[in-house]
Amino acid sequence: MNAGIVLTALLTMSALLQIWLAARQFRYLQRLAERRLREAGRARVAFACSVTALEFMLTLGLTLGGGIAYLDGFWHDRPAGAAGLVASVVLASVLLHVALRIAYARIVEASLDVARFSLKELLARASRPILPIIIVSAAAGQALAWLMTTAPSTWWLWATLLWTAGLIARVWLISDQPGGGLGTPFLPSSQPLTDPRLAPRLAAALARYGLAGSEIRITVSPPGALRANARLAGTGRSRHVELSDTLLYLLTPAEVEAVLAHEAGHWRCRHVIRDLANRALLSMAGFGALALAMHHPWILGQMAIPDTSPAAWLAAAVALAPLAAVLATPLRAHWRRQMEYEADAFAAAYADKQALMRALEKLDASNATDRAGDPIYACFHHFHPSQTDRRRRLDTMPTRE
Image (tube, rainbow, N blue to C red):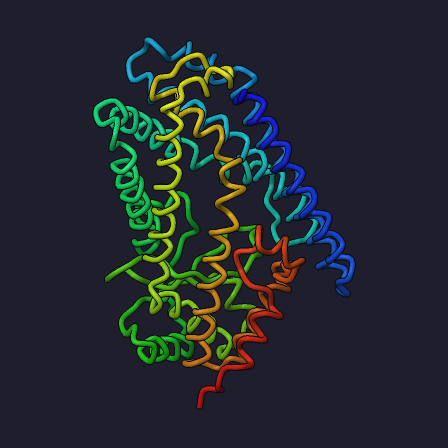
């Protein structure tokens, strides 16, 4: 069986699947009464299809188009060649996604009036993570290539442990430190909540949730950012909730408290740890599949990659990531939706569930998002449940006394 033909067939089938899903979502959006949500949904679906097409074109260019073969020839006899080859392939993907992020902000978000950044600001914000990503990719590529050479039968287990350690480090570096820690250059700045009326109320709410002493921080949105959001951050003693300043302007104190209860639910249900475990399992499956493929070196040759070194296999795996995401994303989306339901249940038990629903509706309206959608499309693309599903579940829960 020719691996090149199989790769082309898989990419074609994946593209057709995305087109079919998009068509279903377009038909669903036609039934939405609110024009702004309808147009926002169409724009996002169309842009997602464009992203998929460009990712698949990059995959073909790097594999059958000879991109990896050229890069491998450049790096093959150089010091730290594995690091250079893997980082080069990652750089190609990163540059594509930086361009797509800028295009999304300029075309979609600007038209929906949820962000007003100049092109210079977008370039600065989108390009900041490039250097750290390349450094980490180079180090990971060199380390994985060394593992594949020194432990050919068990490297994939060690690679899973290394990858999981990297995920944990990322949580600590970016999310664990108040104000962003080492990730400060890449995150909005934040400061403690000092509102004399809201701060004591939310502190008392956290104590009621079993999280006394946890800090509440307000992220200062950069000029032009209109999106309202809330998120949990950190673990252990550094755990804290971050609320955007735009969210405080948008919601009433009761609604802010309900959102806080939802975020506390993520903590109490150990969703950070569970999400890390889920991602570790997916990474183990990916490394295991790569280890099996390496027993068949002809696969690379039929994908126009003449070298069969560990670095070449890693570069091919990076290039094939969009194809793997077609399988992994629905599974991750399902896990995340279940976590949202659990956090909603916690919020209903400790706060006003009607205030939570009002807050969610306001946030969706402000951000021009509608979580509802075609059921099959939602299974593949939605990491949050629809408002209808959330309300249906909340209605079955007892009201807090």
